[in-house]
Every structure is written in structure tokens, then in C-alpha cells.
Image (cartoon, rainbow, N blue to C red; front, side):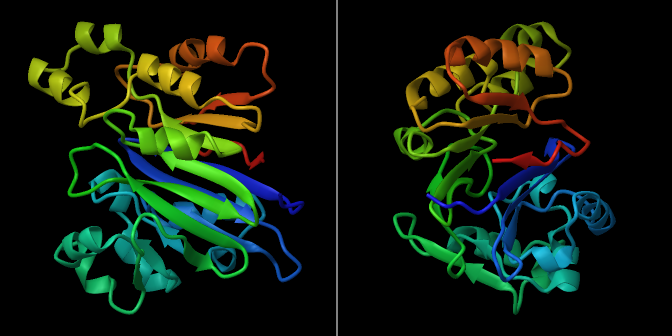
Length: 270
């Protein structure tokens, strides 16, 4: 297990945009990555500076899927930061023809190896594996990220849990997992029935109750942090999401927090 300081921060988490930052210290200044590109370059720069970082602390970008709230600013990231952007072959083909990203991918895009292989994102510091999750995009993946021996798993926009996702979370010290909606709020709200069914139909999003059940399955003695992501603005509240998951963690020392939708979270030291 690494003794280096590892930090995590969410810059936005929800349908308005998604972008997460991970950094591990080192004698050479450390290594950092972004997961998804859903906030503007200007805001990204501001949030990094507030936490003591710059674009120089970003060594690569991982993409989970091709919905707009995750790739809206990928073109500017590619054009201005010129950092490696990692994605699956299927997502690469999709985004190569997307008007917002296609013109900017050449020279920076890196294709991930098969999902059972580690990819050296920052050699010697950060490597990652992806796993496919159910969601109604071209393809959606979660990531298990190894930061010098510290395992971090993120699964956002996941319509239902899979054994593979549970397996990675059950080995990780930190897990970022979707808790998108409260079922009563969704069914009693203003969304059309067709949209409600899409959200809870197995290829949309994960409910608070489903998130809590997943947490029950992957809870293990080495788990230290659980961050609830991609909460719905209209069909959930941070209080409801945390209340659904808290009983599962009763008696443990796991830190549980809901990530803000449109603002930055605190800088979490993992």
C-alpha cells in the first residue's frame, strides 16, 4: 500500500456535468488524472487552483461514456491541455465522428487495452482497468484505478449493478458510486412515465436503494471512503441518498459523502 498522499475531488457530478480529479504525490511532483470532461476549461482551471493544482498536475483524462454531460468540454481539453485522453476502442470510434470531439482527438487519444488488462496511464504512478456497466450510451465503463497500490473504483451512470463492478469495489479502499434517485420521488414527480421507466429500467441510473444494496455486497474491512455521485436534481436529495446508505455502514469507520451536483466538493485526502 502506498504511503504517498492521495487526494480526490469532484468538480461537478450530475446531469449538468461530470468531472473528477485524482492525484497522488511523488518526489517528481506526483501524478494526476481527470475522469470525464463535463466542466469548462475556465472552471477547471479555477477549481484546480483553489486546491493548489494547475493543468501541469493533470497527466491524462479517462472517459466513461459519450453522453454530453461527460464529454461536453472534451474538445477544449484535447486542444488546450494536450494531455493523453484514454477511452475504449468503441468510444474512440463514436467520439471520432462526434462534432464536438472528432476534430480534436488526433494526437492525444489513447485506446485502452482489453478490460482484463491494466493500462499504464502514468507509468510508475497510475494505472487503470475498465469494466463495462449497463447504461444507454454507445458504451459505458467504470474504472478501477491503482494509485501506487491504492485501489480506487468509480462507477457513475450505471443502470444496475454487475458482479464485475461489485468485484472491483470489494477490493478498493475508495468507491465512487451512483445514487441517482429516490424511487418515491421519481414516481411521484413530474417526469413523463416513459422517462421514469428509462431511468429505472436497468440501463438508466442507480437508485438510492440499489446503491445501498450494492454497498452491502462490496463492504469489506479495507473500505475507507464511499462517495455518492450523479444525484438527480429533481428526484433525490443528498440527505436521502446518505440516509439510504448510512445503515449499511453502521459500526464501520467508512467515510460516506454525497458529491455536489454543480459545485466542487472538498478536496478529500484518501
